[in-house]
Length: 134
Image (tube, rainbow, N blue to C red):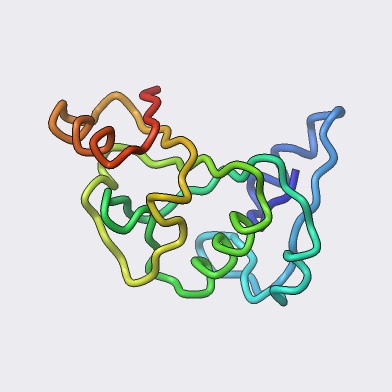
């Protein structure tokens, strides 16, 4: 597993069958994620599946972030992944921030909670995004 998040890395440290690589950088306060990694470091990795969350999601812009550095890190990880799984809860639907991290056409599957309204589900599916409600 490859992550730039300290909390996921700590949780995975208890999984004996999982090797976790933490991509280092500058620690963002309050989010406990690491950013500002040289793009070359990530470009040389291979990731089977990138699970990427965002501050907002829209069918027009995909996942978006308010922090440009965080968006850059997530874009770099998706670029080297075979598949990109976007994760968001229903409160993020329709929220758009300054930087797109994963464009709608780059999302292989979107996983959201069951709080999405039927018309929002229809919008996602009409955009050609595979949707899984959890």
